[in-house]
Image (cartoon, rainbow, N blue to C red; front, side, top):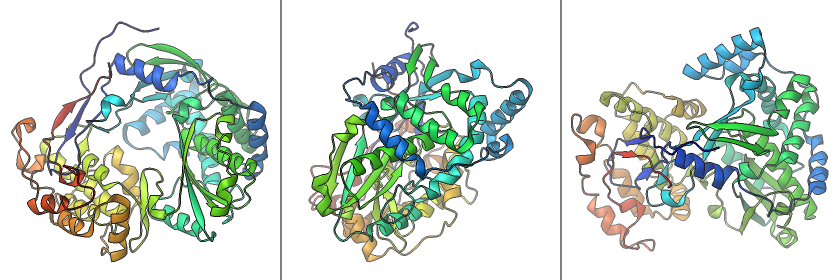
Length: 507
């Protein structure tokens, strides 16, 4: 059921620094057009072309139950609420009071939906279908969370799927330094490793009822709870309402706002990868995964055994690539840099383009504090990394009173050490290999003044759209022209006017 078309114009992004590097970004606007595109192109898609083998999935998912815990106890609602802050914490506290007074109601199971304001390069956003956040009430998530929280805490560190290293396979809960240490440890168990990079297309929409039921069995194996049984049943058949009034129904699929999305997707993907490897006859393997992102490690001699048609039989539309060198490995949009403490690092183009963009409108002076917090997070999560660490240091210096908003809170808590490290030659070498930014350009980019044109400190009282970006460092540009990547313009030498932009409508 679709309401009359109208547009909401409140979606904005605010780019508060004009440093002349990276690319301009935008988000999909919150309107009924984008809601319809998100639902029809991403979430309510006909997946009957995928040759799902129900018996194969049942066999695999039952065989993996032995890796999961048997006896767990749910935690108190207060323990779940303790993990939240601000308005969300107050909302969950109110839900707790109502749950204890009236119990869980059918209305709490209903799904609500809005367009997710994902950041995309301006040149790419028209070709990208908007994504949706589908969520239920805090009452449902609080009740479900009392089971999922202890389940997550148990499985993330213990589930190993018989990998050769006998180390954890689920990387959730680890920061990028810990993930790199784990991954390098896994590699050490192979003589001639090959890395299988896998991309499940639109994973959430390909999750069917059988996938959900197999995950629910693992939950019930641990808790044996009637309340949990009813909570899980609510996920099998969903009725949803969008922000602008579209009513829809769906059987299966993942509701991204459910509190077990991260955990449930990791469980399903773990089963998929285990089935892929064992059904292919590979005995020596290792895995690292986070939700639908994953890297599989096998010996070079086992690559020819891999049967990639198994992904379709397990219900997924999966692309794959087998690579030899570690600098070609990408996991959760990151690559490994061999800094003083090895770590996974995001593409620097993404860091420089996205980090200074806020979806919130702050008072002008408050931007300095927010940018300082962004900078401290970048330093903490990129210690010893070329370019990005220096960029973070400049932002951090804007204020001695960093403002931590909800978007930054996770990174702030995940990376408590916020001091810089020397940039080693190995770090520069791997950075150049991974991202195509050569040593000379790295050094020049680290000298560039990224905050000279910070909106918060330089142009208060003016219209930012009228502000013209200063010329990019001429030495960076001239040197960029000599690199193999140069093709009339590189991301590190682009100059764009950046400011406040309205969201993108897909129709």
